[in-house]
Image (cartoon, rainbow, N blue to C red; front, top):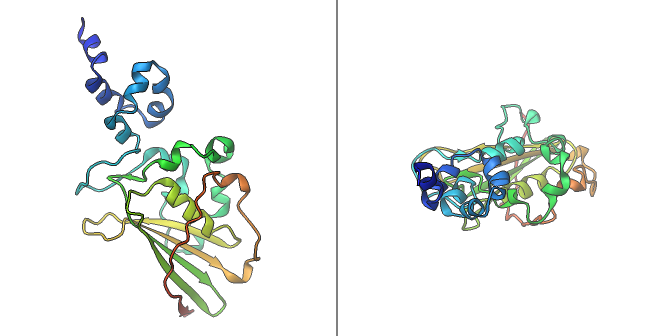
Length: 227
């Protein structure tokens, strides 16, 4: 038996090798190579590489899920100072790769929904919603802590529901400081004067069939007059 044969027939070694493949190949192509490879893709080593199960806590800076960064870019692009230029708009959502294969993204068992946002995983998210009025801004905050690692479904369902209206946008601020209490903040802004009650802006095909309507427990509204 050659060294290559030894490696290919040893699950522990093969899993370490497969875990270094690009995520797209590991997720889509590897399971169809052979039954052995398919079995290897569900081992803990490979599942961590695919961001399906969490890495142990670490003091290193969290790594964003590269496949999610590619497919859901507005959620991983931090906005500049001008809140009206934040990357997460209804138009940006409807121009993601999702638009090219909506049925694949929408289905209830789509793998992206259970993928972790980062490794080690994010666990606590703050949502900041700002309503822009003529006289000033009204702001309220909520904390999402589910007692488990946060998945893309948690972020997507929460953010998209907040901007499903005209004149709205969001961005995600990722916190990486070692002593952080919160892993990420979703900051959303919308203009009240432009809103039409009940009018949906984001097309239906961009809402997952497995969407979870999670009622965020917002605190009191705080009014800040325009300067």
